[in-house]
Length: 432
Image 1 (cartoon, helix red, strand yellow):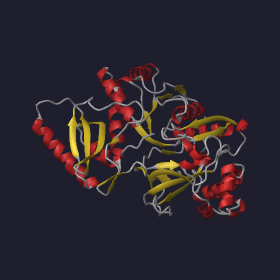
Image 2: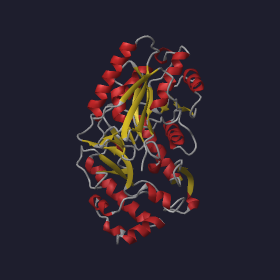
Image 3: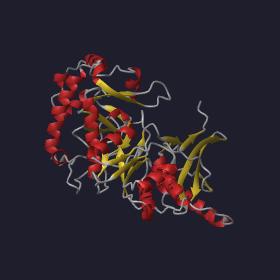
Image 4: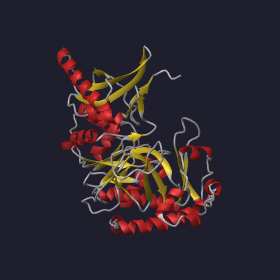
């Protein structure tokens, strides 16, 4: 049975010691990369300059633009014949980002995912269904290999085909499901139309959710819908994929595996470190990868390190729920706004469904915001009640984001449905 208790319960001093050993080894290994060799030379750095974890700050940041400019294999630290797989982003705006993996990288990635699954109570007698896309998207094969490492019966259902997903859940007695949050809501709605009660008619007990930002209010709603415990998962293809950080049963932050990654939180504007507990951009350094290690990679994800120890007994630091991405931030009338702030308010209203769309537009040279949100039930001839509800939603949103949006309550099924990542923002403003 899978269990790496000695790695999960290391003390802070043991974690730091292991990190330093692996960091030194990683930096030396990076000199096999044409990109990092050139970068170190340009900054007058040598691997021997890194003698402490504090010395990490001497190394310049790595960015997504660096990965794109060295496309496809310019950042590799091993010969290509030693690599057995690559994953890449969609590359819709230029070259995709490509990450290479050796056999050891794949094995270690599976170990990390298995550790996450074991942490939330999954065992070899569970049935794991994966509704993520397979192929270049890491959520498919990443969870697949981890679940197999743990010894579970796996159902590689892939994305979409909701009625088939539900048939698999019921017929195969699925106990654990991996899905993105917006798709879980779609799954539940189809179950309702089919007369299936997930609490009564399925064996689901654990849900693993990630790949798109979601509020704690959305998570609680999902748990209530399906009658499961829903655990937040964080991963990104540049760091392998899923398995980077995961909630434990305490559900009070995501433990990031510090024997795999060194975490920094920096001010996204000044790039200076911020104190623990303060929100900033997460920067990650891989210290357990062969094919393509990354040093001080700017993730653009906004979070903070939660202070204090977790009652679960693990001393790996905990990350707060992600606020969003620095490049997802909306600026409206000089105010910084994240979609998750709006979702947090909407999910507090039982009258509302989970599907919503934020539209930014320009009217009479002023930027405006419309928030369209679906009603949970079909309502007719209740205009006064709807007006009152829209007014209260507007008031709470204004308190949260300091801007008064136009709130539109629409009938269920009106807004576009997505079986991939949900599109929450439509920016129609004129930019000069």
